[in-house]
Length: 113
Image (cartoon, rainbow, N blue to C red):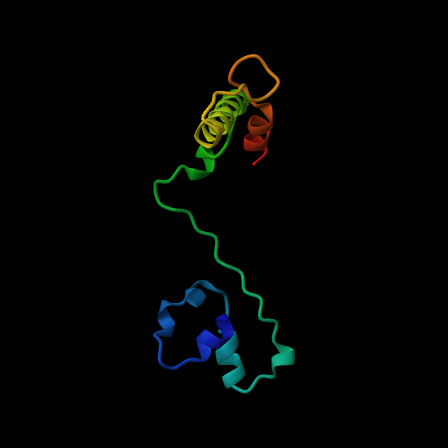
């Protein structure tokens, strides 16, 4: 799709991200007469960092984050199942096998995701 977009003359090709790539564009090299077999159309994006961003540090979790997420997802999963059962069958049913509003399958799934 990218190759086809680069060949179209009716769109502004400068809006495509190719200017961030190293070297000449694949399409432009084909038009210049190079053979497609001789060109490896693999590009590498330049490394960049957003100014004044601490995103790399913000996405690191500690053990207490995982524990909190586990219990939050356990509770939200319990709410979801109980709420769905109340709406569907009009009765409150204890869901799960633990004491209290916890369904560990949702907690484990949320933490793994």
